[in-house]
Length: 220
Image (cartoon, rainbow, N blue to C red; front, side, top):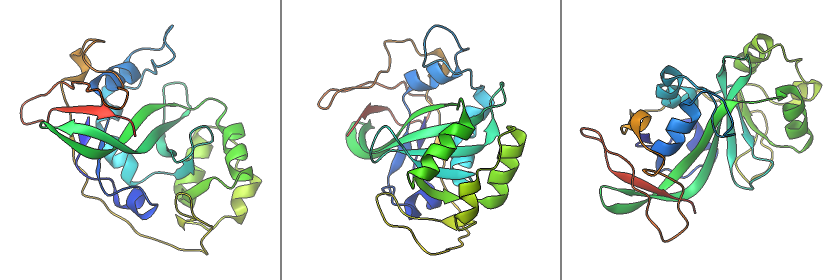
């Protein structure tokens, strides 16, 4: 999966103005029915194909509590078990696109978040909310049957609370759009050996479809 530019909102939050990508192996894993592998999340192809749209208009964007500098994009959709679907993003990676190494924001996973209410409470306590849209968030929490956290009432609505690694902003409302485009490698038929996360200095071959850049991912 390859998106030629990060959505406007994520750039406003401080994500580098570079492409976004997910390896074919990751796409296959998140699409695989849940089972023994914890990376199998059962996300349908239709939702995976809508990743650009979901990134453009999220309910919330949060800081990762486990990987400093990474972000968690809370989408407006639920998985088959009624859990909010989130996307995790690692900035400042790199990918080989058409034979050239390019800086890339790496989408590391997409899954339904267990115990979302407790997770969100912890993020709020740690000042980890970067952005939220009040209406989308309320609709999402209602659909997921999650109680609206009291701490969110103190947050500015419909805007950026603070940037990645930055301080809290005053109430700033924003209307943002994106021209992000997505291209799919032959992800759903890739074998496990086709794509994996590489260590710095090694290449990972992504599969290429017609007109699709050939790319590999390296985490920065």
